[in-house]
Image (cartoon, rainbow, N blue to C red; front, side):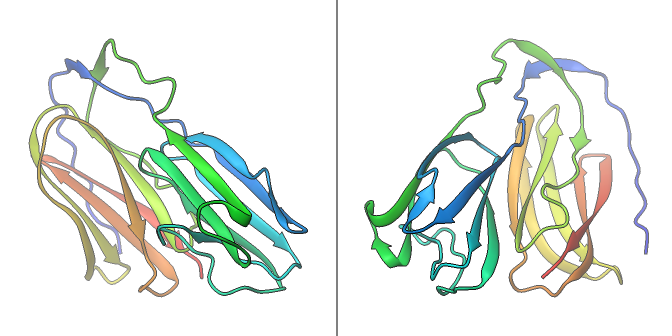
Length: 207
C-alpha cells in the first residue's frame, strides 16, 4: 500500500541547524576482551559487536541496550546511540558493571561538524538508518519553523502501529530512535506531518 506524499515548500529562511553524519563502528569480542574496549563516537552513530564463538554477550550498565543471554554462537548485535554521554557495558559471563573484567565504554559526543553559523533549513524526512534493521533504527527529520509534529509508524495494510511523536516542536533537526522489539518482521512505513508538510518513507524490519 502506498501513502500519498504531499509537500508544500515553504519560503526558505535562516535558522541554527545541525548536520549529523552516521558512522558504523565495529567492536570484536576477542578472548576475554572487547576490541577496542573504548570508543568515542558521535550522536546517531551505530556500534556493531561481533562474537566469533566465545561464551559472551553485551549488556549496558544502565540496561539501555543488550544482546541477550550469553551464547557461544556466532552473532552480531548493533545499537544506535542517540544521546550524548558515557555508556559502560560488559559481558555478564566474564565481567561486571563499572568496568569490571570484560567490559567496555562508549563515549558519545555531538558531531564535530555541528555548524553554529546561520544556515538554510527546509522540511526534510531522511531514510531511516540502519535499514533493514533489528530491532532499532533512527529516523532523522528537519522542520524550518515551529510546528505541531506527528511521526507515526504504519504496517503494509495501512494500520497504525506506533505514534512516536505527537507534539509541538520548534524548528530544528531531530533524531528519533524507533525500537520495534514488539513488531514482527516485514515492511513498515513511517510518516512525518508538520503543518502542511507530509512525507512517508519505507523501512524493513528483519528479525
